[in-house]
Length: 366
Image (cartoon, rainbow, N blue to C red; front, side, top):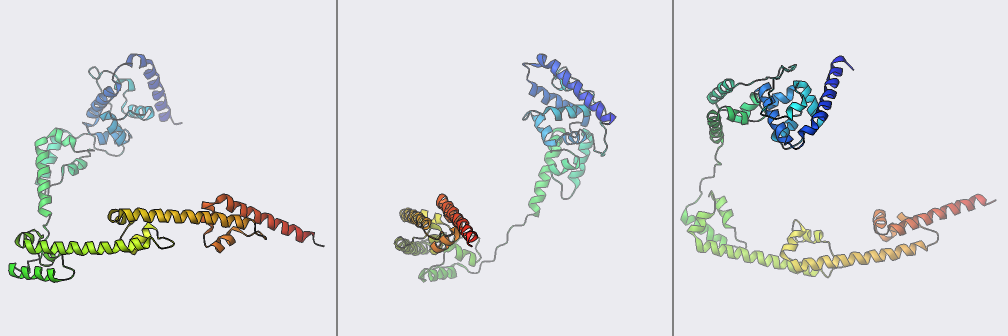
């Protein structure tokens, strides 16, 4: 390996040795809390609390570093040692007493030109400039401009300016949002009464909500308040029509229970114009359960009949193939193997033996 890699591996090996030697002294201490506190101090010393820049410069995964600082996760030893090597801090220092720890971080090599420090006065100037923008950016957007992982650091440096920026951004968003325009009202009270009475006179009345939309009302509330009796009558007539339609579908479902073979629940729902079998279950629970029972009994009978037919096929001479038997029975080969795999395999094996015997007889002919 190269000289730099060799030096790094020697440094890591020595750090592991120091860690093993210090293990008895560290036993019993809250190491996760110590690591979180000391690591935060390292980030503050190296990049003024800029976790994102610290992670980029030390080649440490940002998510992992954030979890270490919060104390949510314990670090893997390899990743932690590589980070310590980058900043020149022994791993035992990160696990030591935070009150006694002092971190003199050496300059980290910055090959990618990452902004290392964002001092308080620089952040305040950036906040002042952002407040003059039109529209003002969000605090999160400004944090990303300043190379911070999250906007928390901006609030820590200057909460007042950060809150002003957040409020200005919210106001700008509200100003850009346009209220949905509604169509102008097409009729006034006398005409609306005639429309409602005409709807009530129809065999299939138009609902109040639909009438409101058609005539430019934002909702049906004002119509219901102004014409309570007519609206109530329309609602009752619509409910009666729906009940009559549902009763008719119930009769169709009841008649379908006598069909042979019975339909599946999905087929029955499609026949009645429903999107899914759940509508049958909600509106006709007893009939739905009866349909399921009929279908299950039918499938069990089919399975028994198939079992009998396959056993009969085993006795046929000459021995048929499985596809030929399935074609004769009107089922797929995969379905036969799924329901009675042992019998299907026995038929296939018998056919192979029959073919082998036939071939042998042909070869033995003079």
